[in-house]
Length: 161
Image (cartoon, rainbow, N blue to C red; front, side, top):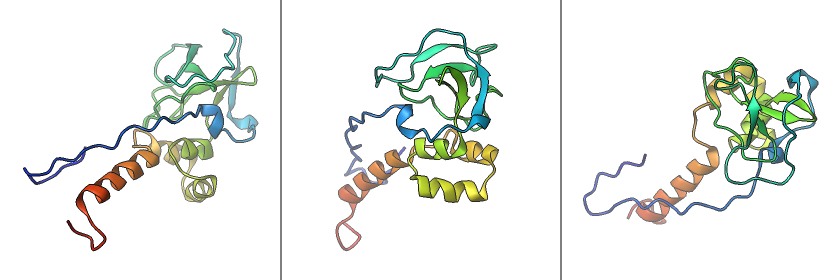
């Protein structure tokens, strides 16, 4: 939400960018600690799927955090409370024919932080705290895009319009 206290000027949201990334683009080298179970469900797709997360099947009860998605699609929404204990905040993905949950570094990268920034974040927060802080948050790149729009529409070089 962007609030403007002026009946004379409305905020115009910047156009959406056509970003072509999938969850696979954010993955780090495999960390065995984050594989949680074997997998015998439907085969994964390997063609990039840019129209949202690609659900493959349910894991256990299939509730939030217990659905398995393709790494070749977009990631699921991160949640602060981690609706399913298995996937916690980042969800579950099929990786190397096993069920995988995102590492804290990967969660940070999905939310727009660089690997170096993610390492700093993870040096002061536990994995649970990383998920809690970034879950349900707004992606860093989206905020930057909105802030640039505010600056362009309401402020000149001197800081005012």
